[in-house]
Image (tube, rainbow, N blue to C red; front, side, top):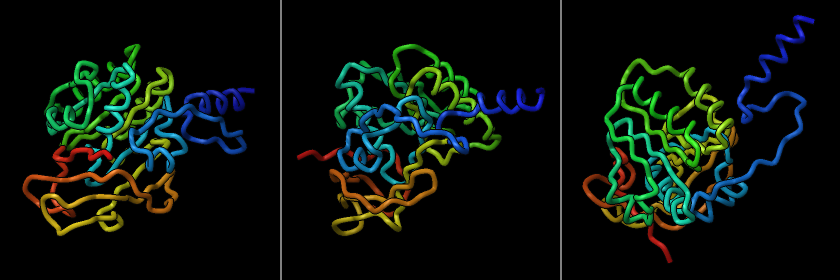
Length: 232
């Protein structure tokens, strides 16, 4: 029947992270975030072949731990630096092997960012792709749906440092719900965060401390990759 064929065709285009009514959940392989607490909250880490969203202050430092984890095992990571904010030195200090990181340097226009993200995601060998969109108008929100499909086909974990539709996992680090230690200002420690999965808020979890330096306070200001992972 034409109607049934149309429904089947529409369902086949849905990213796997969007659960169909009545569908049996499928166990998805995981890619470690590089942080034990976050791995536990995400049942093992970022889902492989899915579009994920990471929001809030400290997000660049947190995803940097995942980049370090992937490159330490010989994996390749693509970083689409749409707003031109990546501090490569901080990424190096977090333990990432920069020889295993493809940095698409920004700032980029929205169309150029989209083209770069798709090209890297479609390239064989990349286990993780980080996408930080530019701060500009003219965003094509439907594009995230297309990127989610590309991530699924390539079996690549894509982490967007933005509030993206069609993300199968959303991690929100809210300043109002974060766990901080020390006096507000440089050196304050972020020790926990709120996690949301598909809109469902989980308990606050603790992880290895992140220290923030430079100007600004620990609970405000623009995240500009000033964090470093403190181990041990």
